[in-house]
Image (tube, rainbow, N blue to C red):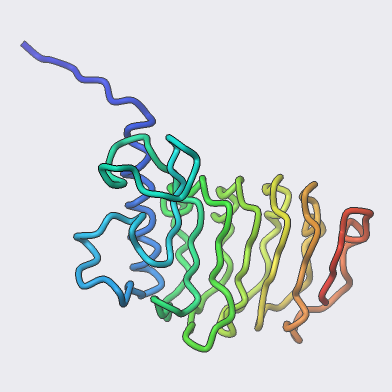
Length: 206
């Protein structure tokens, strides 16, 4: 007799999130220098990852650790030196960004220890809960994809330093956006979209 077991979607989420974190770490060729064996550590225990405990809505690990299904969301990834040294390429695989849909902060920003390269992948549009996006690595290049109408909660955008082309028309489409900074990109051309000049905008660096 065949027995079928149903696995709830919430039970699968933690596995997908940690798989995505490890995929991101592999793509940008970084490790947590404070951890001797990356595979033996839960992704929420990595130095540059912050998770939200869904039981009490804090960043404190549950009594039994982060491993229990459906108990956490990955809230922040901050790979800009410190315990890590990114030197690979931002991944374009949708599966990685889909697994990080709960992120509110993605910081791969400017740092003397960061050699992150490649272009801004359109697939990061999956991060619909983002509030802060910092991609200021001096080795990121290429054009800026027109994905910024996908971030209803995004408050701050910082991009640089070797991006080219023009700012997409929907760059400031997010209703929560209050700060943008693309001032360290000498190869950007054109003008700042008119939508950036609105009553909620507090700072424009260009």
